[in-house]
Length: 265
Image (cartoon, rainbow, N blue to C red; front, side):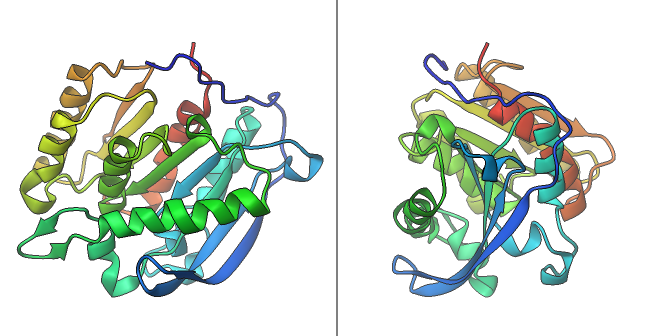
């Protein structure tokens, strides 16, 4: 399923930390609002070359605990750890729109909690954010070098994006996804979608509740049935003590990045 993919692996070494850039108030003509975008450049960026890009949701929760109401992921720490193993990428954290987060992170409408603006949010990523990142930084812009990822509703929209826009996103990090949203509409959507080349990292915490765990296992089985191969194009992880929390997602991101940035066998 991954013929032709060629994500570069850098030599394994003791890397120095990467660095941060903040793009304040990026305007979204698709959604009619503004938000900050946080860019993390990998350790060897200033030495030249081009890099894969990982687009992550809930950008204000990724790097700086002062910007997050519940602590940060420490995504930069995860990226630095991946760099020490020889996997380097540019991380792009797109801030959520606060009270509009639920709407923007779901392409489906849940009669109790809303939703439905996910298509426009993804168009914002594709038409506004990605072209700016590709223009301003030395990126590998093809789908095989472009990862989308997030947790909870961010995991839901990432899984949807992988199947909805396969020409843009070739890999997806789907952490503790809110698969229950809109009566589990994502299951029918994935079942009906064509299998596309790429890789999916799917995870869940053992302390997130039996319903969340059951849904994650159901999605794992559905992806296997579509032809995604465990250990090659699908990595499923259950963190026994994991909770539905930023710190847990950051720890699991350390596992996700090497898998998502690895070249296929």
